[in-house]
Image (cartoon, rainbow, N blue to C red; front, side, top):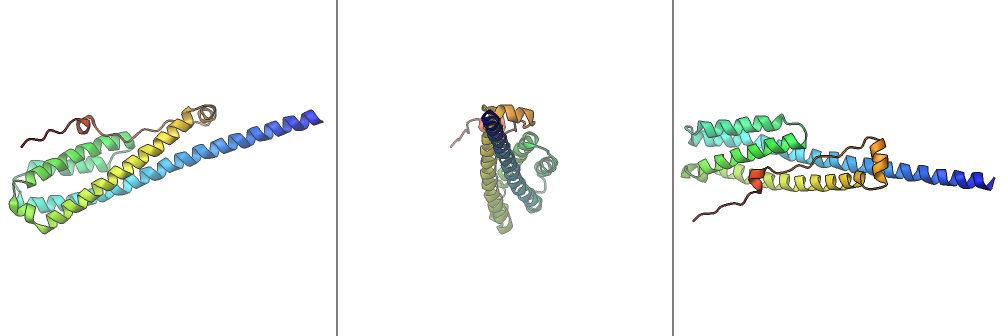
Length: 183
């Protein structure tokens, strides 16, 4: 009888441990989903600002149609992305197009002085900061989750319950390079 109770106690402890481990993995996975939702909110905010910015620039720099079309094209591609990798790639293209748009604006003093343009530029700059923070938070959550499913003994449970590794929201190679400043 004592052996049976000891075995029952061990089995019970093992079941409680597996349940606890499973709940922790679910909690980490849900934190990733929440972090991705926060990125999505900021990206949508950014996408909503871009048409207004393009319209403002269009009034001053109508012959810069290629740049304006590149921004709109990049925005449309970014809105249709799915998953962190595709989204990151499209957002990096959009960032490049926006940099090009702001470079064009430097050639138009009236545009640079336009209050709407300045407000939109400031709003977009603030949104870029929030996106960067949300990306960092997302990647932190992915790190915790990936570490949890790859370490022993959770790796056994994670594999059996089909918890799979998540992708980081990474910058493109171009934005990792050095910035050249010339005076």
